[in-house]
Image (cartoon, rainbow, N blue to C red; front, top):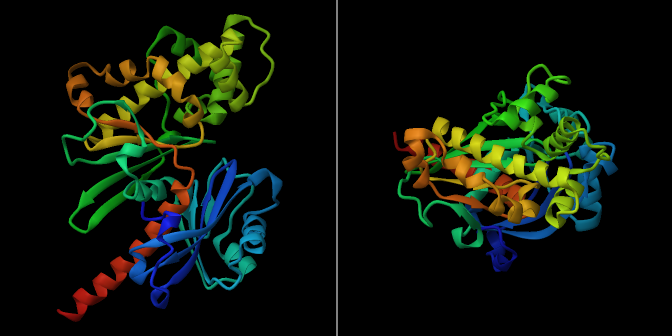
Length: 349
């Protein structure tokens, strides 16, 4: 992997330091990296994970990292952040505090602060992942087509991006698939949707297919079953489902996995993701056994005449905790390299 700590033998004469962060609604993962010439190889020197709820701002988290792991003299920071950048603000309902780009740059005292969508970053990181290190859930071990690759991740919300290979590497398209309207298929899903619409007239995909969504789903199923289920976190629901200690948690996990398979099949058809699908995010690694035991694959494939196309599409679950920071660094250095290439081409015109 391009961002592994085994690559510390970089040529120091060409080393470039960077702080890269992956900021979600629940956790911020931050790394200090060193890169070789043009950022073609980079190594993670220091890495930390922080709970966003424990800090009053993103600047406070990055300052804590710089105090613990060094890097106060580093003048460049690349952030992979959940949401879209509009003017000077990052727009996202899942972050615990507002983020102003200029305010953050000034608070940290750095010359350059570059921001990319978190799942656009993950899509960049996929280019550094060995396929054998991921769990194959469906399809062949190798993609038959070199078509677009879809990256989807249920975390605090649901992120998604599309990676399209080209002659110069890849084009990454950030999406907000999690904000799209959720479509039910089974009678149970229709009943759950009706219950969820008591709180939201329009139920979005991430209202169910995310960590927060797992909690919403658990509450709705308990209400429909007339069960007195105590409030639980996503981790507690998953643990109870794995232990089979609570029938509501078991049903919640089963519905979650099946619905995820159905939505993923729809997204694969919408984006033409014949090059494969990678599942990431904070929720699924703990649910891996539950996914395998569920209707996830059957629902993914259940798309009528398109079943044969989806059966040719590899679906993998990747559990690399550092994907976001690796992706942010890969995007940042790749952007520099693309600018340098454009300059070289202009000089020959």
